[in-house]
Length: 293
Figure 1 (cartoon, helix red, strand yellow):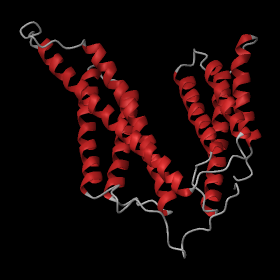
Figure 2 (spheres, one colour):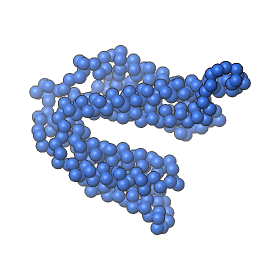
Figure 3 (cartoon, one colour):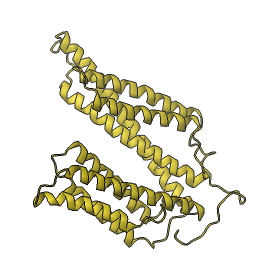
Figure 4 (cartoon, helix red, strand yellow):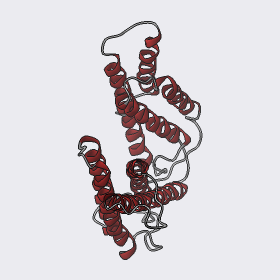
């Protein structure tokens, strides 16, 4: 995968954009699937290129994914995945007109900054630690917001069922709005926690050269993310008559898994000062070099 070049990545994204623009001049059978295939090819090439660079960066003792080149391609990758997801979910829309040009611009930016000096390994740990903390904090806040919306939905639904809406000063938003808020909180919390967990993995690789997958904080955070991904799939594919109530119960369950993850992080010294160290053993630390991989 190390031989994958920016030309391959840009060509795949560029082909996807050309296919989208062809809507203006002709009807192409199966165009949506061709666009998705081109985006998928670009995403796979992008991920493979970053993976190969990451292996080289660790081998040279540099920070993992800690150059402006890497960050440009990471941003392009995230935007391309978002474009593919929206193209799949909204086949009648032309979101590629607006999302694919920035993807190509970020790929071009990566080429322009390819010779900029990388961050040190210590700087890489600091950057990824900040992203890890921000992602996890935002994910926790969104899960708790979803819990509040779920509880409001259950209370409001019960009051409507028993015709007690006007018997109290408690005024709650409409059930449809609360159901929409629940769904959005589920999607956003999953995204933020995924970003936080992945950033934590990169931080650990930069700091220690390994990831402590069996540590309670890491293990329970991973289980929380798996649960949330399952909840997203359940919400998308299973739509019962009382979908709002189902979403409310899901958000309550999410809060329970969140409590377990926080217990693993706070109860077992995850992220404390003793763990915030760099690899300093000369026998195991890779040789530091200044040149780009």
